[in-house]
Image 1 (cartoon, rainbow over the protein chains, first blue to last red):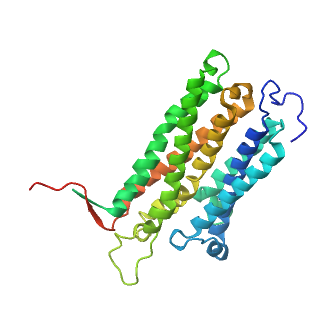
Image 2: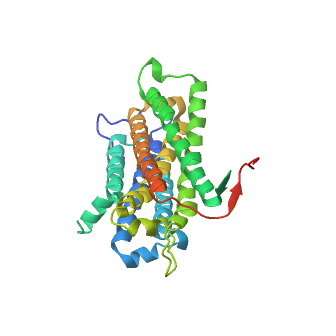
Image 3: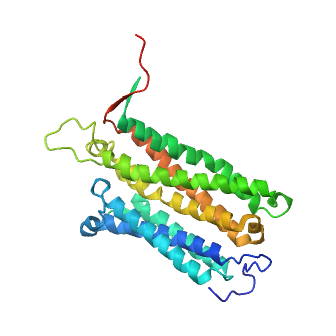
Length: 120
Length: 189
């Protein structure tokens, strides 16, 4: 994503490059998708579900959300280190982030979860 | 006039944090759309941008308070397992819903979806607030950035709506009760 094609939003007129914003956007997509994947995995596998119980009273939800938040913040930190002072192809970053968010929504929707597990 | 501690905390979670966060979307989406629109309307005064930054920061705090109070205060009461031999399940909302095929969907669809989808809202709104805080008025120079911020804010609103609607229905069908009794007002009679 560091070599933008013509037509990409490089925002050269701005004093702040789009890199920091792109890092935050993609990290939000990564964090959301992680939550969706973990929710599905925890629902599909009782053994994995047990591993996700970080706080007993809340059950596997505690592990799903804690890991997702850690992955989100770690991704944000790493992407910021990578893109913090650069302009990137934000169109591609947006497309990837929106795709990840769409996957996240799909994976948390119980009928879709059941379909993917072969239950329906 | 009395209320139980669990009822009070559920009201704080749903109405105090969640509903306030959801109401705030109307203002945030309008303002984000305004700053996303090229032309004179997109170039607001610095006071407008300061207000938007504060507004979004408050929304982020409300979003995190909503999901954290939901997951770590209310949800454990909701999903508590009834002791063996207990026939009155009114103190165990999940078990109560699952005990009847006519209400089990409220858990298997409603709560199962709500407990996960709600977390997209604080993640998305933290990103939105960060971008608006970082770029300020310069966001008008970044078309793709404005587009992403607006779309993520709309999807955060959708996620909050799903969680809020199911939360309201769940609390109607199988409310969380119990805890110590708090007297809010002493009756004169």
